[in-house]
Image 1 (tube, rainbow, N blue to C red):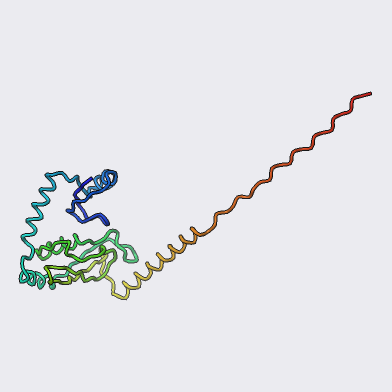
Image 2: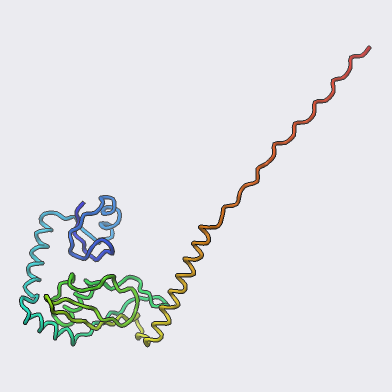
Length: 206
C-alpha cells in the first residue's frame, strides 16, 4: 500500500515521502496515529506542486549556494526537547526538524535530503550538522539540543551522562545474555509407584 508520510518515521522515510508499506502496518499503525495518509492521485499531485514551489527557493547556481552557505554559517539552531536524566531524548531531532527550523529562523529553504544526519539526534548536546547546499558547496550548522526548561550542561557533564547510559545499557544486555544462556531446570522423573503384592488366597475350610 502506498502512503504519504505526514511525519518522519524512522527506517521508513521522511515527511512528504511517498512510500510503499504493508497494508496492515499502514492501517494499524501509520494511519491511526496520523503519521501518514493514503497516496491518492490528487494528494500525490498536490505534493509534487509543493515540491516544485519549494525548489524555486533553493540554490540554482554555485554563487547562490555560496551566499546561502555564508548565511547558514551565522545560524545557530536551538531545539528544546523532553529528555531523561542521562540525556536521552523522548523522541528525536530529524533532518525534517532541522530544515523546518532553518526556514523558521532564517527563511532559508534547504532540501532535508541534503541534511547529512545519518541517524536522528537522540541525545542532548552540541552538534555540527552538515548540509550540502549545492554540488561542492557544503556548510555545517551549529545546533543545540537542550533539555526542556533547563540549560545545556557543560561538555564534561554530557560525556559523563553518555558514559553512564552506555554502561547501563551494557549491563542490561549482559544480564539478558546470561538469562538466555542459563539452562532450564530439568524436571525430575517420577518413578512409577510399585504395585501392591497380591494378598494370599484363603484356604478352603476342611
